[in-house]
Image 1 (cartoon, rainbow, N blue to C red):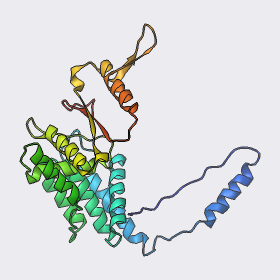
Image 2 (spheres, rainbow, N blue to C red; image 1 turned 180 degrees about the horizontal axis):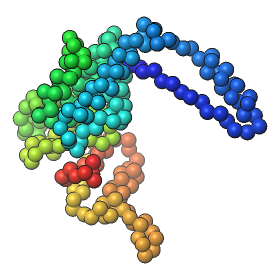
Image 3 (tube, one colour; image 1 turned 135 degrees about the horizontal axis):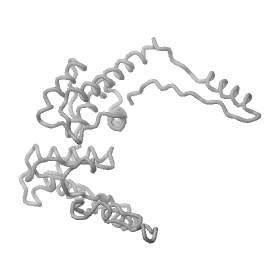
Image 4 (cartoon, one colour; image 1 turned 30 degrees about the horizontal axis):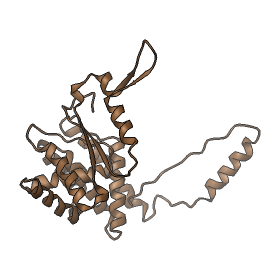
Length: 266
């Protein structure tokens, strides 16, 4: 796992025993093992942390302004989750390569074409000479191709890659946007991924609820409190989620909101 130094401060506890509580906490903190900043382990990790922060700061400034771009703490956490999983899967891989792979593979799906030159240029400047291969799930890739064939679609390499990337994002995020112009294959992407997961095993068969959020008013979508009776009225989404929650099985379930992306939905 790529680790970063964390400093935790313990506040005083009020009350008659506050003094003894503070002293016990100080003793506990003093007993904790410490590593100095000059440690052979901390120096490289501080360098990686600096590169991570520098990359996201530059991406926020230099890339085009897209509604789905996110360079904040939520995005940072997602990269760290991916990096941790990669490090556990391949402990011998250097941490610099792990971080580069996590940054590259987690962000490529959301980078628009016009920003790719800047994105890859910054990665090359911050991690010179590094180009670790992409982590691949060959079983999933084979079943994506098989799903395309069963649904009479052409298993184009770029399209199959988008299906795999969607699965990788779903592993770390509860919500994923599929964006693109009309007839770009967005709907077929999630349908193929659902079919591929089903082919991988019955325990991965995915339930799908397709909802058009633009077909109803905002209150009808989310629910609202009636001003006349002060009672809560379930909306379309809350009703769907309540019904899904009542299903006793543990199979994966997706709610697909099929509509235009606007700032309120982001």
